[in-house]
Image 1 (tube, helix red, strand yellow):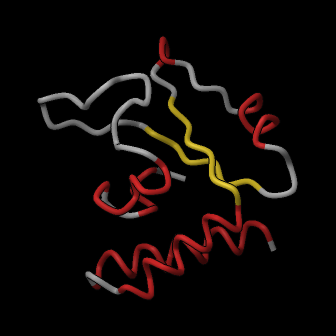
Image 2: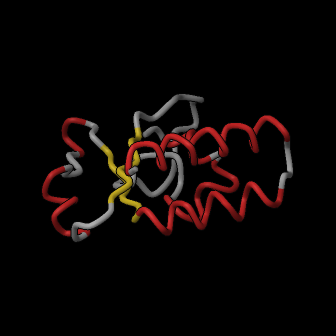
Length: 103
């Protein structure tokens, strides 16, 4: 999944970090998109997921790892807050995609 599937950086950073390369101290001063992918996993270890989807700075491959239940708990919390309709709808869609994938 993409970083934006978990909302804007202002809320998503709580669970998947900032929306810039994790090997950098800060983002670029030029507005840009970072191709950050989020791997949601269940039934395997975090280490196994990291081996399957390694972060590769030299190729600008950046993965964030999120255990299934933790992802759902985060999404439920943010959906319940319902701060902005378009964000809430995006988070609901993400939740449904995750549940469909694992069921």
